[in-house]
Image 1: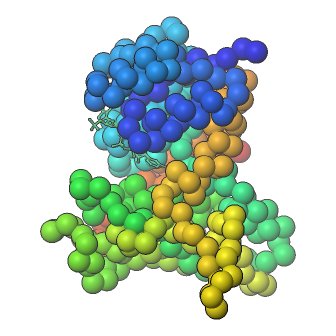
Image 2 (image 1 turned 135 degrees about the vertical axis):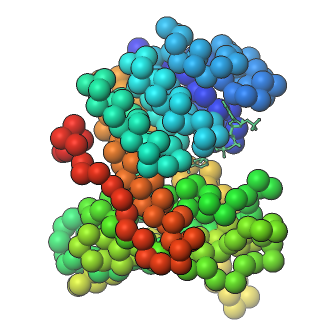
Length: 336
Ligand code: NAP
């Protein structure tokens, strides 16, 4: 079977899981090259997977042995690598965020439109999760009426030492922002951040947890709690309240235990386990569609729309007020 030749930029935590996934789980693809600023790890990965190592991501993108690119490097590098992939006319899967600001995403959108071809997919893997997909199917059936409210929770056990308050939005709540736009089929038009008391586990000068409140164009209100230092595990919750009923994600569990007067189940410890199936479906779909020359998942416009909301959230943190989401009208190129 023809195998899509993939180059991966960024061999950190998620880069390594994607390389492993593309090699051992997903069918029809092969990792032919890797790149990372951390040479030692990247060279080790390259020899383990029989792939080439490039010091510079741009050189990997130019390699004729790389047909499609996966970007898993540090957030501030995403924009330049996606632009380089578009210039090379190659399909590119970029982990979220597509760029750190709406302006950066707009550069990508403009470059993709100018290239005349859809090339970019963004790593919003929740759209491939069975729980969220079932919610979407139920909402689309009309049985629940219009969605009025949503309550979301995004908790991580601990964050790394480089944790910065803004990542609570650009790297964390960005998933809720995208999935809510997709589930409700509604753009988000305004955002406000409410800051509770800061946890003692948070580094000096940083803030966590936070509550984000979002308003959609049709008037629905979404609240999102993000808490990066909750200590007990990785906990994703979502409930949508419609006019005629509610939809709630079930807790992901294979086993519940009844013993000693208690009913319990394990809480997963990080995103790798919670969304393992979603990442698999996401990558199989990306490989299959890339081979057909199609972008079928969340596109550059979705990446732009999510970060435009993130910009409004970050502004609200400074002003303490509701901030409008400043976003251009969707170009014809992205209309479905
Ligand atoms: P990580 O473990 O810190 O890995 C990032 C890697 O990028 C590191 O090896 C880093 O090297 C490298 N890097 C830094 N600058 C680079 C450059 N200029 N060129 C190439 N590589 C560079 O972080 P991670 O958790 O894997 O996250 C990577 C990306 O994936 C982030 O954008 C993150 O938002 C995203 N992500 C998405 C999900 C999801 O659920 N979809 C989950 C996790 C992460 P050093 O270690 O030397 O700095």
